[in-house]
Every structure is written in structure tokens, then in C-alpha cells.
Amino acid sequence: MEEVDVEPSTTLIPSAGFHRKHLGFEWGPGDLLVYETNYKLQGSPFVHIVRRDEDICSPILRKLFNESHLIFVGLQKIKEDIPSKNKKSQFVSISKNYRSVIRACMEELQQNAGKRSHDTHHVSILLAIELIWNLCEVLFIDTAPAGSLLLHLLDWVRLHKSDVDARAREVLQSDSPAQHQSYWDVPTGTQTLTEFEVKWRHWHEECDRCLQENTFASNRHLETICKILVGDEDTLLEQKELLSTWYHFLVTRLLFTHPTIKPPDLHYYAQSSMNMFLGPRASPEPLDIILLSAFEFDLHQVIKDCSIALNNWWFVAHLTDLLDHCKLLQSHNLHFGSNLREFLVLEYASGLFTHHSLWQLAVDYFDHCPEFGRVYLELQIERVPLDTERKAIKVLRICEDRQMSEQVRSICKIMAKRALRNNRLGSALSWSIRAKDAAFATLISERFLQDYSNKGSFTDLDLLDNLGPAMLLSDRLTFLGKYREFHRLYGEKRFSEAARLLLSLMTAKIAPRSLWMTLLTDALPLLEQKEVIFSVDQTYELMSCLEELNSGTKDSNLTDQDEDIESTKTELLRLALARNLTMAIVKEGTIET
Image 1 (cartoon, rainbow, N blue to C red):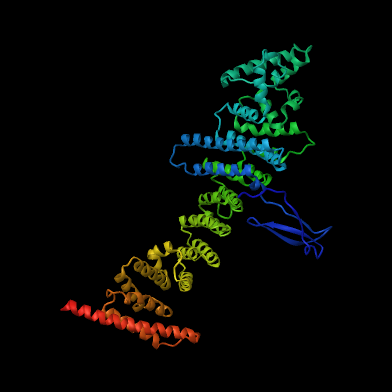
Image 2 (spheres, rainbow, N blue to C red; image 1 turned 135 degrees about the vertical axis):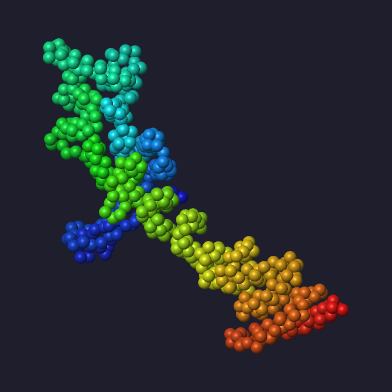
């Protein structure tokens, strides 16, 4: 069942602040450690319960995590020996798949934004994430050929200026597009780069000439258009309400001043456009800094700033993984032995492990971290709460598939002890066998035998009938399995086989001495059959066992009534054995004759 998403509560801690000190906290793997600091406290000692990654609590964002997991796994399967040209198209396709998942979740969140306050915040985060990802795709993954970079940047801006396409369609569908009020707000075209460059140069020269000759001095609107076409920066800045962001201003500025810009020149225009658009008094937002780093082709700074600015590891983990597959981060190793890609994937996967259902996704992420993935998985898998047997089996299969023998034993022991506490002997025995825990299997076997003594019948017959080689785990389990087999043979009227098995349990010392009288009593119905079941030698062996049992030390805990019962059983057995011996001698003598 999914968790209920609620607002974090505020908790008063009575003992905190006793020394009038501030409280500090430190994140653990899904938990919060609170401690007193050396700083003096002002006011009451309240602690606000916070979440490290509140996105995990959003049902819609969990779709993002689930679907991106499939894309991630598919990316890991791309073979190294594929030609670079083919791999590039695959990487671009994967990048677009990631962005389509982001956009789908964003649209669903926008529909629910009025219902939940968190969703509006998540929409803004996803908008920023897609904006950054798309720019990285343009600049690093789907690298444009020389001279066409601006066309890709135009698509990038148009995609994220959400009303441009809608307004363009509105203009084109009108009766007179050129007369529409939004005509000049959305100029668009489909010509080739060469056609565009020729037309642009012609426009630029023609407009510059018109401005120099004051051709449009009588019409300020036409003059403004000419100034835009020649890339007059002051005129462009006057249209801030249409541009809305500095990077929109950047692309517009390049369109009218340097449409064939090459990547190495991009950083200069980006920095100056941001400074011009924001002005000297405004400070750039974290998103601005991240985009500027991308325009400067500083991938590591983009990743670093995103790690700090965004509220989860999803974005940086998946983007870095893709960039690493594109061989764009190979030179960047961290001082503790891992690389940047693995570090971020490990952090993201560790966060997933704190959720009651997403933890299963994290396993695949750990699997694809060759340096520390297995160590992380071993540590995290032990923290998964084994709420149900079904969940325990899931965890167990994960561990068994990866030969994590210690974790397998630990899980099985936990489940075996829990089943035993609930008096579910069959489940407890099954788990102890999987754990290969001989001591615990012995204990549970004793409980089975005790239960049999009390009820006169076995429970969990399917398990006991199909122990197979597992019964060799301990002597007591071997006896339990064989003893159950005796009862099955007897029930099938295979008396001779049952007799041989019963006798072997005693003579081979497999049966505990405390159960010898029970086994001898089980032999009584066989001894009283009309047909002779036990041979002469077998009968002597049974007599020997009975006498050895009676010659031993008496149980001091037996009551007088119990002693009378034991004495009666002994006399009945002696009579039955004597009768069977006589019949067996006659039968065997007759056969010899």
C-alpha cells in the first residue's frame, strides 16, 4: 500500500535544550540524527521534522523514477564495440526519452497543481531540469555541425518558451497573418542554413542602410524593427517583456548579430547577455549560473551546481551517467577512488532504498557501479524492513542472484525466528534450511517432534515429504524426515519397508534416545499383524533396543502414573516381540525346509 503524503509535522522535544543550546542535525541513510551544539539557544527547543528527499513521497514523481529506471538499464546495455556514429544516435534518442518522461510528469503535475501545494513547486523544479537537460543535449550530446548551432538553440528556446508555438499557430491560421497583432512577436522559418545566412546578410545590410539614411524615421515601429534586424542591443533590451529571460535574449541577440556562431565563441555572448539583461543590481539565480556554465562548456561545474541547487539526485545521476557513456567525463576521477558518475549514481540509489517500494529500483543502479556498488548494496539490503514473507522472498532472491551468502543467511535466520515465534513450524523449518542453519533446524525439528507427541500427527506434510537432501542438514532433521517417511510407508501399507526404516532409525542411533519408546510403540501394530513383518534378526534387534532402554537411568521427572504407563508399554512390547519371534522362527524354518 502506498504511503499517505502529509505535511511534515512539528515536534516538541522536552529534554532538548536543557542546557539552552541550539540543536544541529545530520542526515543518515534515510534517518535524521539530532544533537545539541555549543551555541546558545533562543526560544523554545522545537524541531521541525523534515525530509531529505520529499520527491520520493510524490506518487507522480515516483512514475518518473520508475520509467527513468528502465531507460537507465537500457543505456547500460549499449555495447562498447558499436561504431561511434551509431552510438551517438542512440545516446541522442536516450536523452530525448529522458526528457519525454520529465515532460510527461510535469504535465501531470500541472494538472494537479491546484490540489496539492507541493506539486506547484515540483513543476518549477522539473521545468528547470528539462531546460538544463535540453541545453546539455544540444551542446554536448547532439553536437551540431559547424554553423548550425544557433538553429538548435532556437529550437531550445522555442520549446521552453511555452506560448511561442501556440501563438505562431494562431498567427498562421488567421485570415491575414501579416496583419495579426502577434505576427512580429513570433517570426519563424524553415529555410536551410545557407538560405538563411544569405537572406540574413541581405536583411542586415539593407536594414543598416535604411537606418543610416533615416528611411523609417517617421514610423518608430518600423525603425524599431530595423534596429532589431541589425541586432541593436539597446532596442532588444527594450523588448524584455517579450524575451522574459536572459538566455532568450542571448539567442535573439545571436540571431540578429551572429547567426553562424561556433561553440568556442558562445561563452562570451552568454556572459555578456546575462549581465546586460539582469543589470548591475540583480544577482543571478542558481539556474542562471548553471546555464551559464553549460554555455561555457564546463560540464563538471554544471553537475556540481545542479547537485547543490536541486532537491534530489535524480537529475545529476542520470545526466552524468549519460554524459559518461558519451565519453565526456572520463578524465574526472574523485580522490577516494570512484569516478563522478559512480558517486552520483550511488547517492541516488541510496536515496531510493529509503522508500518502501522504490528500493527495488536501486538494486539495478548498484549493479552498474563496478567500484563500490556491491558494498553499498550489501549495506543497504540489510536495512530493508522484512514486513512480509513476500517481501523477504524478494530480498532473498536479489541476494541469492548475486551470491551474497552472508545476507542470505541473515534474512533466513530473521524469518525463521519470526515464524517460530508465531508457531508456524513449516515456514520456520523452510527458512532455516535455506539459511543452512543446522542448530536452528535442529531446534525446529525438536518442536515438530514435540508437536507430534502432543497431537499424534504431523503438520506441514508437504514440506516434510519433500525435504530431499535438505534433511542431511542436521541429525535431528534427518530423523524427522525419516520418521515422517516411516508414517507415510505405514499409511500406504508398505509394512516391510516401514519396519526396516523404523529399525534402522534405532540401530543407526539416528533417533534420539528419548524417542526410542515412541518408536518401539510404533512397532506394535506391525508386530501384531497376521503376516510376519519383522524377521528373526530384526526382532532380536528390537528386543535389544528395548532392554538397552530399560537398563538406562530412569527419568526422575516421571510421575508414578507415567512410570506405570511406561511399564505397561514395556510388558506389551515384550509379549508382542516374543510372539513375533516365535512366528518368525516358524516362518523362516518352514522356508528353509
